[in-house]
Length: 195
Image (cartoon, rainbow, N blue to C red; front, side, top):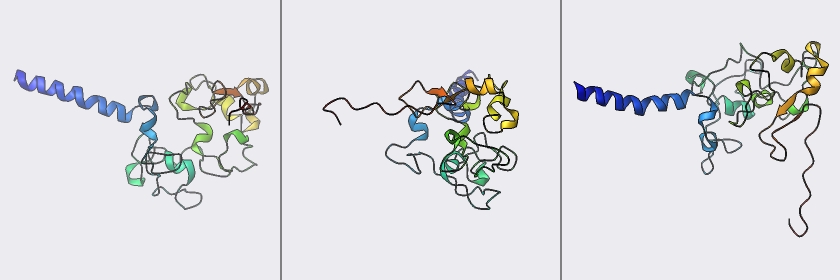
């Protein structure tokens, strides 16, 4: 009986971390958890196959772009994803859409190829310290209204908007954030004699 307990403890010690890792936040992943350096299956050297099964309820076509990549994990298995924190295309903020100017004026910094994609609002890299990987600090969700007001002006607090910093892990020329109202800095000139 004692031997069975030991075997059970060993199995739990080996299996539980696998489930925690698989179901946990992006913090548990390193680069190759999402990016396949030599065996990419999608854009931006993504390690996961883009979701070609989930249908955009607005266009009645499969999702495209970075949204299809995100939905490779964040959609139910029946709809082509891995079932990890699955989102609902019909019961959440619209994604993979061209914004309607009557509803929202979306700053260019949140757009991808003219569309509002998942990565317009979320930067999924583990270096992002913000709540739910949002690209703006919302005080752990306490200031969501300020974040929403960046696109939905009727909710705007001009002072809060002016002070918001947009997180962007992909721009290593700066300290991963810049005020919402300032464009990214120009690249530094190359040193003399270097290309």
